[in-house]
Image (cartoon, rainbow, N blue to C red; front, side, top):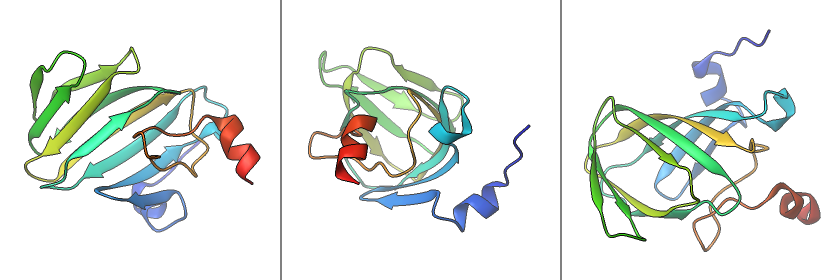
Length: 133
């Protein structure tokens, strides 16, 4: 059994900050759960263009408002508490937080904890991280 405290994670190296967001990574690849679990805040006024080419992600909005745009279709969807979106087809998208948006996220395959978005808005594949070490 794994027990983690969000407050403790936010004070550790599992709390990863990058341009426009901060992510407390409660479960990572080395926890052997088959997925990673994050509590992520995306900051108001940002425009976060992402394309997870190596991962699938599901996101539940807990607090805040904004929009997500599907870049393949041009569709824009409202984000607010209770809305879940799943990037089940490695969807290229842009999140535009109007307020800070607090989310709970799951990634498959799990991330190792070192990842931040690359120039394409993706997290690298694990093999790419190992090669960089």
